[in-house]
Image 1 (cartoon, chains in turn yellow, purple, orange, cyan):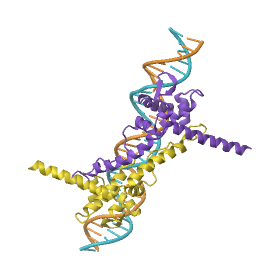
Image 2 (image 1 turned 90 degrees about the horizontal axis):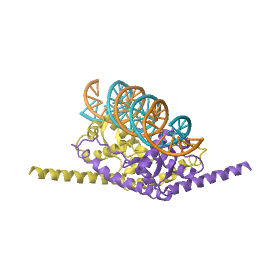
Image 3 (image 1 turned 30 degrees about the vertical axis):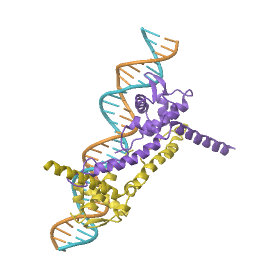
Image 4 (image 1 turned 60 degrees about the horizontal axis):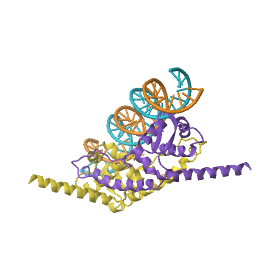
Length: 152
Length: 152
DNA sequence: CTATTTGTAACTTTAACTGTTACAATAGCT
DNA sequence: AGCTATTGTAACAGTTAAAGTTACAAATAG
């Protein structure tokens, strides 16, 4: 059950690259301090995103770039890159094949779980990195407006 | 971390109760041998299902009963009983609030993840224990038919 | 050619789930 | 009443996957 924070952290990295490119150097160190994790963890994830064709990195130099436009990268693309075909619901692979239930429940649950997973993945596929960035910017603008109010 | 099969095992228990009631004694031991786990694990799950009002158990005696008709128990009812509001996608709770991305990504992902989770949960809600049992029985009948063929 | 950075391997730590042991509490039977 | 089987739970041990750490080779840029 439960998808690891790698998925969330990967979206974080992609949004960070888009928002901070040209503003600060996009080193694994700088990205790591935004996620509050270690640079190695960031490099691991970026390496995976690179191999999946979502970003372009260069060995030895900072400043990775998004390989596609933000509107053309969906959350499902990121999910696939990081988690592959990992299921959202875990099937117990060790049930008694002699039993009517134990012998058929795995295949059965697999069918229904697959339907639920597909529904969730469709939503992820319908959400782009641009949507995420837009939402982040709206929330940030709201925060800043509120803070200006307090100060006056 | 380690993925949980409690949800699947709980559906297994419910299906087992319905299919084997009156045929074999529904002890935690018998159920455990179908799931290939220990009786204590089964009792733990059954205790939770009991408290959630999905089954009725009696301390000291075997043969728990489903508290509702199989068509009136949905997979989402079971999920809620076992997992509560546990999210399917983990948000990294520790990101840098000073950063535009780190300070807004949690809320942002929460919104989009919630959409995906709701879509998945809707599918679970649309699937009843009766659907699961029907599918198990069809698969079992198919297996038995195939075996008869081999023998002749 | 030096400083910086990525990429990766190997290892440790941490968190959560699964399994085990133990035992009190309850029910049903004789 | 006493015996047996069973549930319900607590406490603990074992297992597994993720996250973090250390170390270092390989690549780039000045």
